[in-house]
Image 1 (tube, helix red, strand yellow):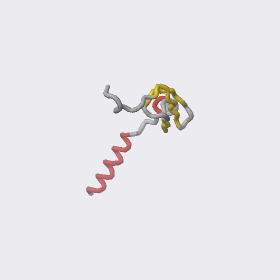
Image 2 (cartoon, one colour):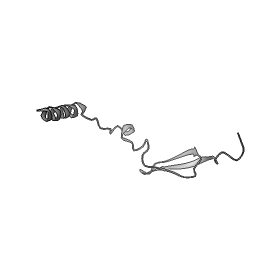
Image 3 (cartoon, one colour):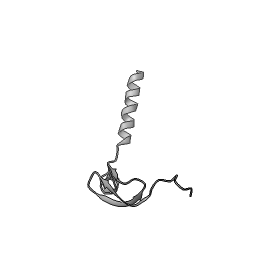
Image 4 (cartoon, helix red, strand yellow):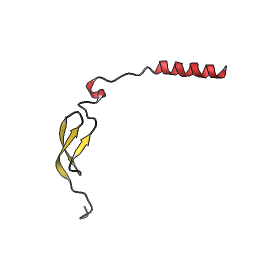
Length: 69
């Protein structure tokens, strides 16, 4: 590595989520704050919502048919 061109690496940085969860990670920044993490993300907690795409497509087709006539 070239000298004096790389940022300082901090091996133990506390990453804090908006939900209150904290993680110890390595980073080039001293403090990390995030809005969402694996403890509160709906995909990982099992609270994800499934969109009704067929209803949306039918609604779109209905609007287009009404516009043509």
